[in-house]
Image (cartoon, rainbow, N blue to C red; front, side, top):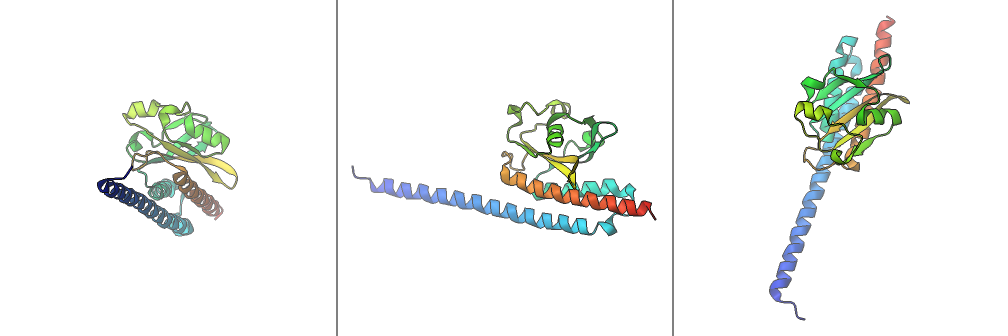
Amino acid sequence: MAIDRKDIIQILRDENDLLKARNQQISRKLARQQQAFRVLNRLCEKTRSLDQAYSSPEELARVLSQLLEMVLHACDIENGSLLLVDEKAGELEFVAVNGESREYLLGHRMELEAGVVGDTIRNNEAMLIGDVRSSRRWSREIDERLNFQTLSLMCVPLCIDEDVVGAIEVVNHATDSPFDENDLNILRVATRLVGIALEKVEEITLALENK
């Protein structure tokens, strides 16, 4: 059966539209990667300059907040938390928070093994949940208290050397699309740099105490 000329033109137009959409998607991903690379470089520079930026334990909260902000920028995310383990209390503490839940979560404590963060720390394994509603590990308690809607999340253990000292958890991609492995890899690298920064903070603190 012969194909009508108009059908051929429409097929070509559809193909052209598809190629344009794919090119736009590739361009967005490339721009996203470039942004992440720039911010990760700044995070490295921040770590190297901690000798000048951190001079007393009283400045730890500010440094942690700055580090978290850079991690979120690298991941192109607005909402996230940095939690540290309090071994004596057997709890996790939100020591830095960015986004809508900051006022409620900052300083908030929860059981060491609670939720996704607890699993991440216990297993020393990064987690990506594309749809929290389909996960039994996720707890809706905080969402209900804050009238917030978590769609997807990522959580990566925060380590100093081989010791897990906390975690960084981020929620909801800026585009509202689910996170993917590429997003998780960026968060892994950023969290590793934060671990290196915290190790340096420990070294500086010890040096100050020994003066």
